[in-house]
Image 1 (cartoon, rainbow, N blue to C red):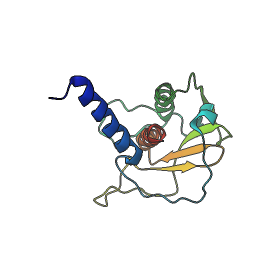
Image 2 (tube, rainbow, N blue to C red):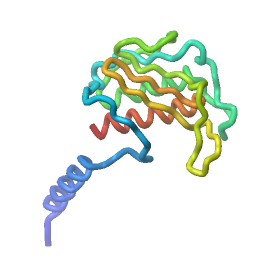
Image 3 (tube, helix red, strand yellow):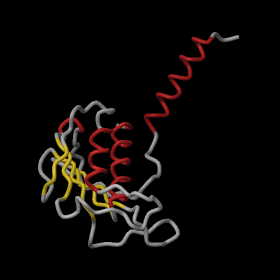
Image 4 (cartoon, rainbow, N blue to C red):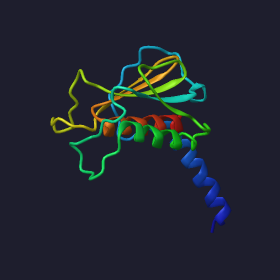
Length: 155
């Protein structure tokens, strides 16, 4: 009969090996246009698009939908978990080097798996100096922040 320690060691090895091959959930379509990497530690602030900072998702199910700025504040607090500390949230007109820029996409429609229009869609663009998350609504931008956190954790 294996001891608890032996089982724990085997479980840790299996989980570690699995983590190396895990993809984000849900999986999403993406295009790789560069082999350059952006280190999460190089990001120094979360910027919220000044045009949409007070926008809320009126198509969602929540009774008190957060604004894009409030989602940005939640995201900055969540960044402390992967090791970044005290990431300030600021309102800005555009993305800047070292930033994660939260905005809304006004030039495209987002669809769910059934082909219906959804307010939860987003694009996630990772450059060599910054990240831009453009949501169909503030809720869509929020889901983009979840994907970024998940991908950062997965490496």
